[in-house]
Length: 94
Image 1 (tube, rainbow, N blue to C red):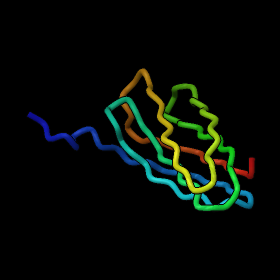
Image 2: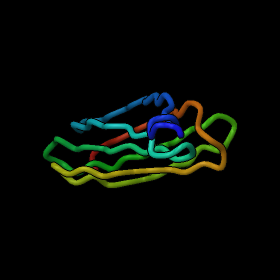
Image 3: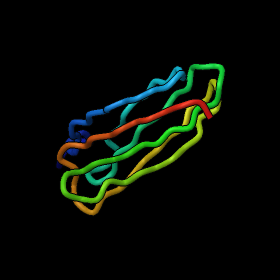
């Protein structure tokens, strides 16, 4: 029997913020699913694009709006198991 963390994989985040106070936490949810929690610590709403990249599969793009002082969970599933997940996080004022 494998421990719960047996499917853990590295997650790299490339971030670009324009005049917003954003932070994030990544999650390795399952062997084929990754997630990120986007936190907005600023006074203005932010619109963000999150691109999940898993090797040769097509990138998955999710667009979210994060209210001032709020958090949003964003996830993506893939057809293959994730070996290394890359996430591009781009945010700007809404």
